[in-house]
Length: 69
Image 1 (spheres, rainbow, N blue to C red):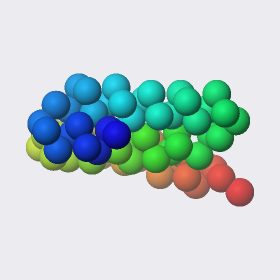
Image 2 (cartoon, rainbow, N blue to C red; image 1 turned 180 degrees about the vertical axis):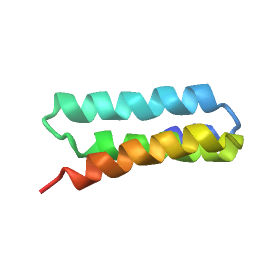
Image 3 (cartoon, one colour; image 1 turned 90 degrees about the vertical axis):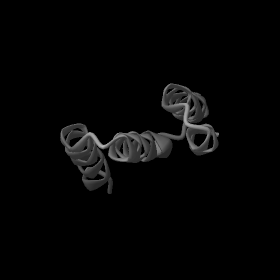
Image 4 (cartoon, rainbow, N blue to C red; image 1 turned 30 degrees about the horizontal axis):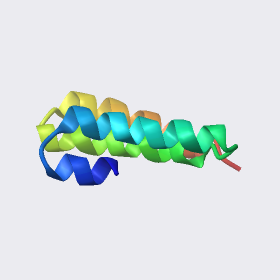
């Protein structure tokens, strides 16, 4: 849902829906969406044109995926 809301231009709502999906997945015992959410956050900052924040977010997502078995 987050990407759909992002297409309307509402980045704040996109981040909220992305986090909501992560929370629901975690409640069901699935931690994989947490890494995906980091990627989504990086993409949102990329589309905003915030290079520094994009690099920070992408670094965090890389660390998240690198730590997986």
